[in-house]
Length: 258
Image 1 (cartoon, one colour):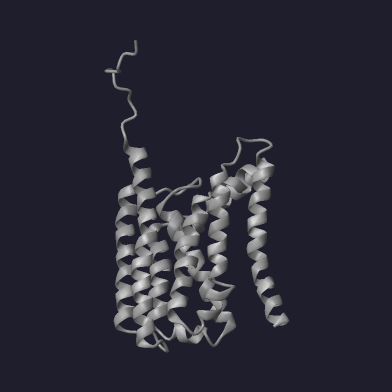
Image 2 (image 1 turned 45 degrees about the vertical axis):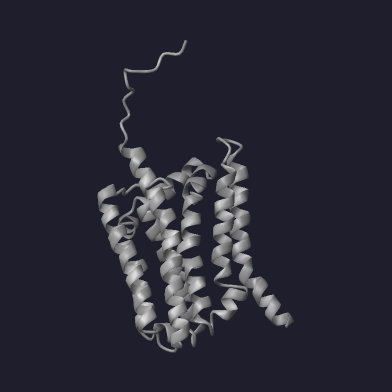
């Protein structure tokens, strides 16, 4: 019992450090810049908690034998946490916290060909949705429950692929390799379609080792839960598109104020 509690605390430590580091960076940067918005602390904290819930705690523990709980963890780790963390604009906070020398180094790194390739919506979609198809339509899902290393790698991939996909669609941080709204819109439609089709496939063809009743419940949760999170993503995307394309000229017919 004590050993299990100690393990849970060790697993929680990286997430607590992430929350503390973000708050510390915000306080430090406020000394030289405009006050960092409180809402972004909230987005970051809730996002990190969502990611932590998929790795440690009751949801993570039950996910080993309950596919519905596993799918709950997938929605938290692969969709909701990446979205909230992306909205918190961590790259912007890092750049304004560090000194000029280190900020330029990070900027050069973000401009590299590697990040240009990874941030392309096509690559991000393949990593995200393609990875999920690989997980649930092969024996990978069954194998990861028998290997701790594989289990960790799959969860790490789910989060990173979800984050890369999110930031390739909506630009909350400085983005050096921006793609057009039309291009991103087309890939977003394909990605959402691929995610929805996969959830129906899971409903009809349970992954290896998953009872049919759990697969049906998990597939429905993936379908409707994914849609709920995608609505937020689509709303932000459309708002950014509207802001970028709206007329910037001032109308000559201004109402007169007496």
